[in-house]
Every structure is written in structure tokens, then in C-alpha cells.
Image (cartoon, rainbow, N blue to C red; front, side, top):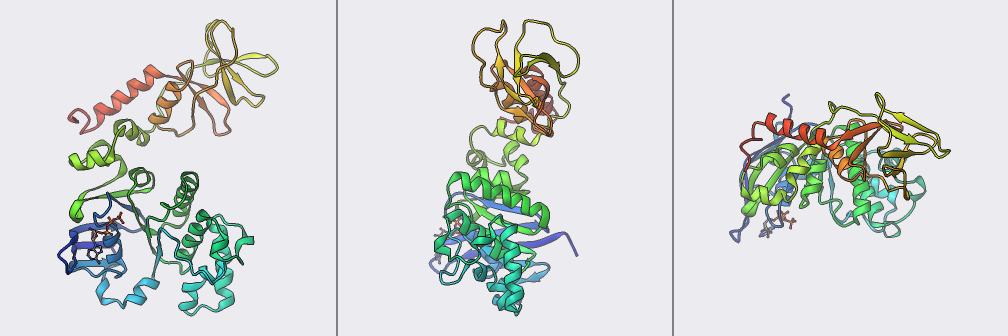
Length: 371
Ligand SMILES: Nc1ncnc2c1ncn2[C@@H]1O[C@H](COP(=O)(O)OP(=O)(O)OP(=O)(O)O)[C@@H](O)[C@H]1O
């Protein structure tokens, strides 16, 4: 068995009216990876996704799943072996949440009780309270409905999960929750997930690999998010990946070798001290911390005036992007580093972060050649 779960080989779709939705597509999707299809509207993402479960039949080439040409597998059998999540959750309105989730296992012959039991477990897996089990879809929020949609897709325990803009109809805060939960879920379950979105930020956040589609169903680039940001294949991809891509690419660079410097701190009871290695000269910026040592704000040199709101924090395992942001958003220009418990452990200097950014740039094969 190879490590490729899904393979498109010259797979294309041209409709009878002459519209080419997907040009001959060559793409290999590794097993257990989360692969994102991204691109502007109408560029063939959904069509490509649907060629995997035969909702759309290719007019040229082949699509194979686990080595089998999908056209050799009866469509209903194929679809039951894959989870499918859509933009509108597609729940059956007259069935309760638990019965919606149990739909496919029931079709596969799992006894009702067992299917419902599993459905209740899945509710918890997708972060929903058990009390929602007996509700009908209309009695749920949009975000809850999408979670039920994900639970339903997982119910038959499919190795492949197809997700077509599953989070695009919910508000941005709920969307962030759903994205985080999907990443958590994937860390535990390691499914082969193909995820369609038109949002490049979502693609970069979620994807192990990202396929960027262009007009006319052409695959413009297939790469890791890091490569996409650092080395877009052409102007179309560069444009689509968008502004700040240089800065955003720092998300993928760990900041582990930045030197940590000491900083003066003051606690709520007025006790003064220093955190970090070594000592600090008097008269500099002072970091206010709470009783647990978590940062609360900054006092200007000379101690006058009200404390200033602190910047973002650099957490363990953080990236160069988070380090730089922590420095740039801090009134003192010093990035506060915290430990896993959120206690200040020292500060990082902007100049040293920028030097690390430059070292990173020099080390990249495309770094010096980038336009
Ligand atoms: N049944 C059909 N007959 C003719 N053309 C079609 C048909 N279905 C889709 N198309 C066309 O195929 C192209 C690709 O459509 P597709 O839905 O795959 O795009 P998409 O990238 O998923 O777009 P969106 O982000 O808007 O959902 C579009 O130009 C669309 O109009």
C-alpha cells in the first residue's frame, strides 16, 4: 500500500454545454493528510471534490481512492464509505440530532441502539452538549448545525472525509472555533480530509497541503502552506495568497533560538524583582505582573504615569511571527515571553528578532531570489 489515498490522473470535467469545470487534473493526496482546495469562485474546486465520490463523473482521466478507480465502485457504496460535509449542514429537518448523526450507520445495517449510542459519543467529539441530542436541526444555531454535520460525516468511521466550504456560512468567531476543533479532531483521528474553501487564510491555517485552483479549472500550485506563502508559483498565486504574505510566512518559522533577556517586574503588592537570566540596570521599563507572575502591563522608565496595556505574548513553541508581533505591539518594544502557565519568563528584543528573520530569509533557497 502506498501512502497516497486519493489520486487524480488527468481527471477533467467538461459539461455538455462546453464549460470546462476542471482541466486535466494531476494530484496525489497523502493518506491521513488534510488537503485544501482553494481558489476563486467557479474555478472547479467543488467539481474536483465531487469527482472523488462520483457525485460528478470525470469526462477524462481517472480518480482512484485507495488504488481503486472510483468508477468501478457503485456510487452509493462509495458515498457511504466517505464522510461528506457541506456548507449548509444538509441535515434532515424532521429527524433529531442524534438520528441525523446515526443516518449512515443505520443505512449500513448498524442496529438502532448501537447507532444512537455512537451518535451520542460523536456529539461530544465535536464539542456539543449531550442535551442537544433530541433537538431538531431548526432548533440549533448555524455553528451547532455544522458541528452536527461533521459528527454525521464521522459516524460511519470513514477513512476519507470530504468537506465543501463547511464553515463559510457561520460568523467569524464560530468559524475560528470550528477550525480549531477540526485541527484537534484531525490530530486525534488522522483521516484523509479534502477541504474546499475560497478563503486563503482558512486554507493556510488548516492545510497540510494546499491546491490552488485558477480560472478554467487549472491547478496553479500544489504545495505546503509555507511554500505557497514563500514561493508562489506565478503571479496568479502571489495575488491570490495576498498581502502580508512575507510576514505571514513567519508563522511557519519557530523562534526557538532567540536569546531571552531579563526584565524588571513589579507585583501587585509593590514587590520589585527581575525575571529572566541575569540582572537589569535600574531606570528602564518595568513589567507589571499579577500574583502568579502573568504580565499585566508596562510602566514607563521613570515610573511616572498610569501603566500601559501590554502587547501580545510570545508563548513556548511560538513562531518568529508571534515573537515579532509581541515586540511590535509592546509599548516597551520588548516582546514578553511567557511559559506554559502564562508566567513572564523574560523578554525578547525586536532587533534580535529581525536579525533572526534575516537569517531565515538568507537560509531559504528562494529567499534571495524572491522579487
Ligand atoms: N452542471 C453544470 N453545467 C455546466 N457548467 C457547470 C455545471 N456545474 C458547474 N459548472 C461550472 O463549472 C465551473 C466550476 O464550478 P465549481 O462549482 O466546481 O467551482 P467552485 O470553484 O467550487 O466555485 P464556488 O467557490 O463558487 O463554489 C463553473 O464555471 C460552473 O459554472
